[in-house]
Amino acid sequence: MIDVRIVCSHDAVKLAEMLTRLLEAEEHRVRLTYGRQALLELEDAREARDAVLLIWSPDARSQTYMLEWVRNIDPARLVEISRGAHDFHPIKRLAAVIDFTNWRGERGARAWKALTERLGAIARSMAPPAPVPAKALMAVGFASMAGGAGAPSPICRASGAPSAMP
Image 1: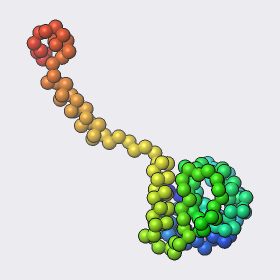
Image 2 (image 1 turned 30 degrees about the horizontal axis):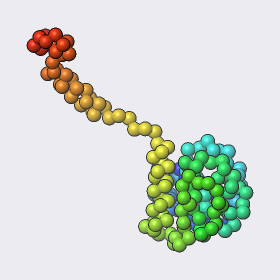
Image 3 (image 1 turned 90 degrees about the horizontal axis):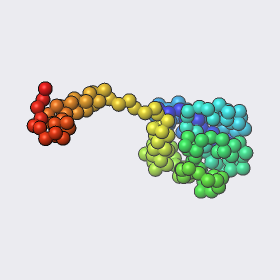
Image 4 (image 1 turned 180 degrees about the vertical axis):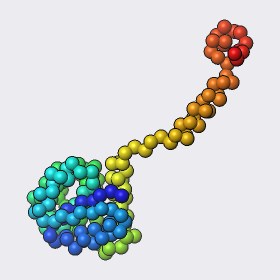
């Protein structure tokens, strides 16, 4: 599973802790940072290969450290959720903000499914490409050799002579 870094303001800590417990139960490694000290971890987070989950709450909209995280983290790694209809800052985004307004901690809820799908997409985009299976490669090689052995050679066809295998 992918590592997740949760960044929020003080009024969203309860939601962040609930998300931390549920994500850890699904075998994600989660790191929670809230308040102004989140700026101290921004430099390390730029180079890390983890998903960054920003929780927009009523107090977070006016916090400069939240805006710094949005500006400095690669949008492909950023997942934003909101606790209210207009809690998030109006900036250009790669993906829509996930609405957690009515979420009550259920794993089957629409908001939870959207979050896990977004984390899965980030994990797939960061995963190294899978190697070509060796058995499939050998099968293609044998099939091409078998197909080429029975076919007439291009030299025999051009000369008009019947093909004869040496």
